Image 1 (tube, rainbow, N blue to C red):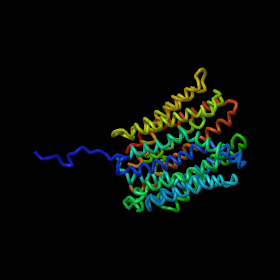
Image 2: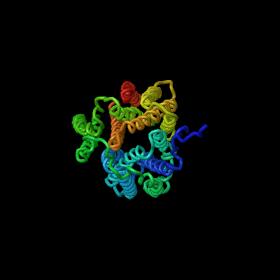
Image 3: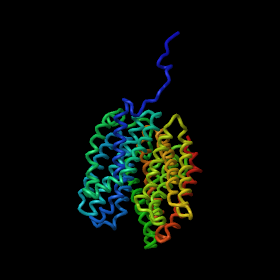
Image 4: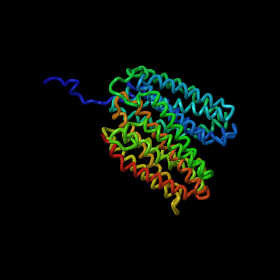
Length: 462
């Protein structure tokens, strides 16, 4: 009898915290955690920033500047990663993110603070896309569901403790130290990621195949600028409708036109026509994010205004959503699963959570119904979004990994920011004295979007 050979042995996928991937995984985890902490903290410290810098009139733009600058840089970094590898855009992104944090901490006026937020957005946008490409090129396909689950888990701790820590730092040392304090933590993350940054493909152009129009730097840069500007003008127009109808309509139409010119160039051909496979997979990222965050942003408002909860208590519902998201990400990483099927199950979860959330404004249901509702929605996002990421990377040729990672981020940003903006417009039109009706309309709109997602999810299959 011959001894069993290596070929006969049962294959075991490498562990993401095993010797070969431990430092890269920890580095990715730390970088994403720092970006998440900054994102969770900004809402807590913005009242102090606004009071100190007299910036209440630009309150919303402190968020929009980050999102729109990040959207633009998603595309540029994706182009760079496809043409030259992921190492340089990652390092440049981390550098710009740190510079933005330093500028925000040192801001002497609101204009400088908004500019600093834009620099942070540029850095963060480059880092996230570079990390997606790094995952596709460093980790084997059967390991990627687990590393994407780690990415989702990196948001849990910031969601749980980020606002509280930011509040303590702001109250004791001042809001500026919320930004300064993150900077030194970047160094160990870079050290841990050096092996992944030196891996084959980190600084090399992918040579197989042809990425088509999305490999043309000038065209794509202009398209990214048009998309970011169009989205910003559209959001401004929607926000203005209730106070200046003519101006709001003009800006909304102009924003849609510019967005319609730029956006199709950033996406795989056929995305807006629901093309089977990768195009629909990319679109599903925007559908999921839009439906979820379009409701998520207004849950604390409802709990505060309708049920009288303080903001700390109202935020518990969002925390349970983050925990559900992490659990969903973990579940999709277990075993060999059909991730295209999981995308649909993820939308089911988001749709169910949205439907349950409307009970918050229907007597005699109590406000705490938001906790199970948003746990279910978060679970759906964890399963759905992570499965979208895994599927998109599997469907992407090497020469399009950067462009498709950027497309995922573009759809995420547009979906969430525009749906939040439309929700705000509904609240403003109905009036702040009838939050319950406004929230009901928001839930109805996001439910329609989630049902649309259920109907098209099957088209993500090749």
